[in-house]
Image 1 (cartoon, rainbow, N blue to C red):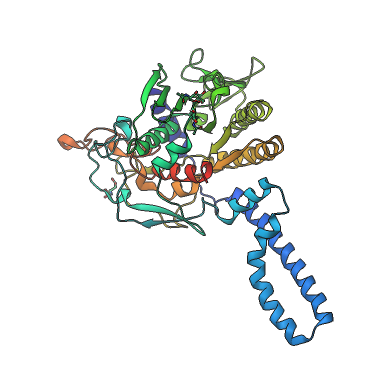
Image 2: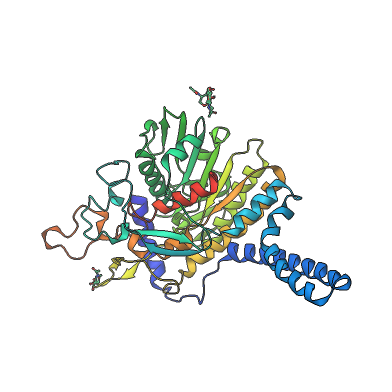
Length: 438
Ligand SMILES: *[C@@H]1O[C@H](CO)[C@@H](O)[C@H](O)[C@H]1NC(C)=O
Ligand SMILES: *[C@@H]1O[C@H](CO)[C@@H](O)[C@H](O)[C@H]1NC(C)=O
Ligand SMILES: *[C@@H]1O[C@H](CO)[C@@H](O)[C@H](O)[C@H]1NC(C)=O
């Protein structure tokens, strides 16, 4: 936990000077996909209009009117028959763009989560908001509704059945682990896993014997190698060396979910070819400053290079950046998140620092997915950024600690980075399921 607190504090200082907000959020992937489908639709329209025009030559005007009406209907139904001529992979691509899961809204829902702190004990104490005494319950009663398609509730039985004889690696930092624990809790309704391995980084291997299904929970906050030794409090980051924590068992993964992390915001001396190339936010060291997006891009590039070059071809999913919701509190220097309802669309713009990281990961993902497609490797994006941005009520806040206000305490620590379990982070698994088990 201590590195996390350092990260939170550092981020706090960095963020304080950074109050500017951008005008609008980049839905990069969405926009690109939309424009591709737009081009495709336009192509069909032009084609159909040409057909209609030809028909006009051999037919009279009134029958042409009738024809254009049916043309409009056909325009919709024709997309799929036409796709039959194309590669299966491209059909898959089209299916996905019919519904972009990341665009939608939060709608109220009556039923609560499928598990609670009493039925699941996988969650870490600092995300166990119910046990820690969070008084409001409204944050458990929202459902993500994508525009244009339905997102069913997480189906643990379907998930476990699909994962028979398989393994799933979940790789990242504490927000990642936060998600992994939410997934274990969602699955616990049907089956509980045995933790068959555990190490000092709290990495673990969970095994569902009934399903012969293995979950690797792997601590690797940068995906590349790092140390906390020489320049403390700065860490040493090796942007050209992959972290063996996740590569060592790579051949065993059938599915793999990874993401970048807030650790890239930490003070870090950055190495390449065993030489220091600069430092991110090291006021006391006389080194060239390097922005957070540079090491993040290098880490993702190297990771995708390894994945796309490997003989082994798991189904790879990259989860997008997880936003935080720190606001200024009533006490000087206190940063809180005590909202109890989601934001509506337009009520929040992302933090420019987060949006920069998001643009890096979307670019690297798109490059890798294109290479993957040629090599028969599935690489998908689990785009949770925007739907999570709309949930300032989903963080533990003060309830990162057990009954924080007991004894009249007022100025308490807030965690506005991690997510309550249960809470909106459960939705990430609903999206994940839609992506890996169509
Ligand atoms: C799982 O593996 C076992 C043993 O190899 C095999 O009998 C079984 O059919 C497999 N199940 C699935 C769903 O692949
Ligand atoms: C479990 O799955 C692995 C493949 O991941 C397979 O080799 C093994 O035979 C399976 N074991 C059982 C008991 O089904
Ligand atoms: C959130 O905190 C602010 C500042 O401490 C306080 O004024 C407000 O009433 C709090 N809101 C809730 C819902 O507790």
